[in-house]
Picture (cartoon, rainbow, N blue to C red):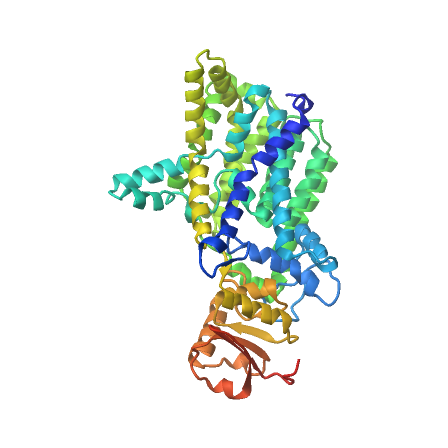
Length: 542
């Protein structure tokens, strides 16, 4: 294994920053939609999940008393208990509570920092695991961070064979990539999400620490990861515990102590208690757990093209019994195999038990593991190419290798940038922005926001102190029932009995039907598209 100091730290930092640039292109495209599209106000949230994390952090700011935990901001109950704790949300919450920093700015800066750190720890891991000649480090780094599979090539080709036009095939080119590619089956795309960049940093840092034989530090980082995210946390807990048991029981590995394993097992016990006993003791969280039991899964037709390019060198490395024995003689290689087996099992757990969003376990972890296993063969291939005398042949082969490996991400980033530039992500119009600004400046304490506009209802958790009856399709307890209540109440004037004694602030479209509740409500705001009514308030003064 190479001494990392032989590669300049400046070069590693520079590479890390440069490899982050494609992520910035996405966000830049989103903000450029304000110029390209009329009456378009980009929020900075490029996916529907992102406001969720900011809303959680803002609970620390909105809470009257200091708590280590935060309450669910998507509950309609202002008195719900603070039961959730995640270190990254706590840190962001403290910044929001005690500084004047803007929530979106904090969230995006958090994401950029951890995207750079994730890429840097990835490069350090590559350098620690294998001797990489400096002249091919750039190509290896690009392949690891932004390489992918043949999802785009296969999807585009199959679409053309089925008779689609060129433009139609281009629109359909990612039909093999689950949810239009937003589950990120390779590594680099994950760093687009601020929270995923943070989770991946902790995961890859754990792998790096195992590779450098700093096992107790790896245990501590794993526990931090388990505190931060249940899906990635349980994956690394199982990987590290399984590997440590294997090493101690069968290989008598002396690089770590039994007490290290004991600390990790205590962390696992806490994880099980917190996620499967403590949180479900809350009624609303039990409802959320039912809503999260989703069969979001993929199959061989998805995984085969996603992992093909990294599976080939991985299996080629193990092409003989002698090579297999040599491979398994190294503790870290055994760790890689356990990582591969457990993550493959988790992302396909729908085959064995009730599915709980199996795609949550993808996120490029299997892809990265296969890349590391096959890394010596990738290096050997690049060495052969770089030693060729013909510059033309050398350049052609490198260009071809990069073109095929980067096709997935190059195509995906290009298509998503175009969508974002044309108003993709979460955007507001001027009327929606006026409504949210008014609600921020006119907060009636403990009054429930009920909105016909789902965007306003959701973003009220970020831009205002209000709780909303319906916010997010998966994070509102009893979401389907709540939306039906909103629809019946504001569209058909059919009021649910549970709302009769609740003070309400109602956001309705201006062409709203003439409901009876208007007789006992006050119109407090209007613009070209919306009206805001206040109902059952004791005092209409400000």
